[in-house]
Image 1 (cartoon, rainbow, N blue to C red):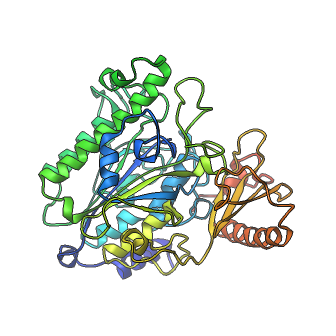
Image 2 (cartoon, rainbow, N blue to C red):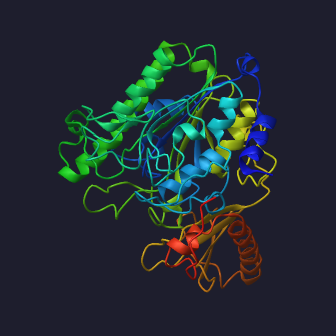
Length: 464
């Protein structure tokens, strides 16, 4: 069958009418995604100094997810998993995407906004996109091709920095130079869409993906003031997180003003752990004591803050220690919106709505949590990880280097138990080998050709 026809039929199968989408009880949804925000960077996640009053208040109104994971240790893959429910090597976005790269989120993937749009939802994306190499180029799909009726985005980072960015595009047209700082500007666009541009007869899905606190960091001086006693680089970073928090608070106030709060599920999280070493430059993000940072398979690279609020459904002021991952957002949001997920493909995420609402204390998963990234930091040589229950296996690409941790007893991954638990090690290794092989068989071969550690080069193949 023709691929375009097949995709159209699949979308048709999962579409609902706009009238049903507007029925009472079908929530609005906001996914607010920070960039390079570490597990320990918020006050409500234990940072002793950074001020995040709006997110702290938000956490008191909902559930704080203490074992929340990004689907990758870098940005583009984790974003692709949120939109597809599929682990990144499976959906093709296997690494961060450089400008001009052939890697992109293919239209053969059925995305969350595409399904919600077909079900009658108004859809909008604002902020970072980073799911194609040829941004605003018809050679590759853009946000509008994946279901966003309105969008204002950048390919990757705000340029030249968070201050006065010049590289935003709105619905295919360059915006030109903006005055201000990135997160507040992104939220300005979101609020304008919420209040003046969306079809208010429909429920909505809004993705707000900020650049903060990704490099190159520039922070409004007023948000640096609480850190005046600190060195400039630290002041810039900490203020950047406070700048992000301020923008988030303005969006939540807009929901209140529009009387949308009670009808809106809001999820806040980050795309991966913090950049750099935490000690130099403006890369001062905190992992909360977890081992590793961005690009690492250790917890500090993939465990991130997570908070969800849905008044009347999610109990206030709660904490949940059940492991959840970015790919879970796809089936979870579809479930609460009354839209069936596709049945013609593997969905790696699980519906965790019962965990969020406190109705369950565990999640049944068809596959264990899995991560893969071929760009491991120097000296780590660990490219894959699998978590099953409280046990986590890390492996090099050729499986010659293995490490095993009991995260319940050792969340900081200080004691490698691979020698002490040989049977468990073998069982988890076999599961990881089988899952990794399955993912490789399904995904495109970009990773083999474009990554020097990804195997022998292959002849050029047209992307799927």
